[in-house]
Every structure is written in structure tokens, then in C-alpha cells.
Image (cartoon, helix red, strand yellow):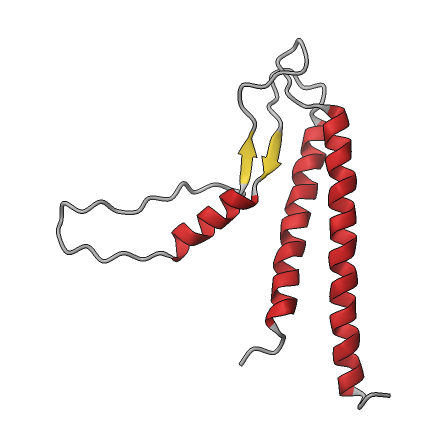
Length: 131
């Protein structure tokens, strides 16, 4: 039995995504002066692909069939921006873009928290009998 609705589960997963994005942006900002550091980003598409690949199980009817392979990583969905350089030292962190992404992600996170608080307030009201 699921104690909470699927909406709360979805909000929880969205908060995990926003938290990971915050961590990646913070790492990029911290390494803005590190030579040859390549900026990273969180890709929803990559996270979805990793989830789909991990959920797929295969049954091989012939030994010549190919297996599904996944690329294990420490942080699923985190991609490194390649072939981009903003500084002479090989660093690819665009500080203005990172600050913009940080503000956007903060607004997204705050909206998710508000939604989650609303769901919990509704549950609390039901528990109290509408009082």
C-alpha cells in the first residue's frame, strides 16, 4: 500500500533533480578558475534514459543476441559539456550562465517545496477532520 499519492512521489523526485542540479552548478562555480575544468550540467533526458535502461530486463533466446549495456556513473544524468571553452586556460565555465541557472533552479526548487507543503497541509487537514 502506498501511503502517499503519486503526486507526492513525483514532487520528491523533482526535488531530488533540483538538488542534484544545485550541486552541479555549485561545483561549476567553485571551479570557475580551475584550468581545463569542463562545466557539467544535469540532463533530464540522460536521467530518464538511465532509468529506462536500469528497468529493462532482457531474455535472450539465442546466445548471439546482444545485451543491453548501461554506463554506470556516480551521478546519473550529469553530463560534461565537451568542446566548449570560455577562458584561455581551457575552462568552460560561463559564470553568467551559471548564475542564471542557479537563480532559475532556486525558483523551481521553491515552487516544488510550496507544492509539497500544500499537499502536506491538505493531509493534515484531513487528519484533523477539516478543522
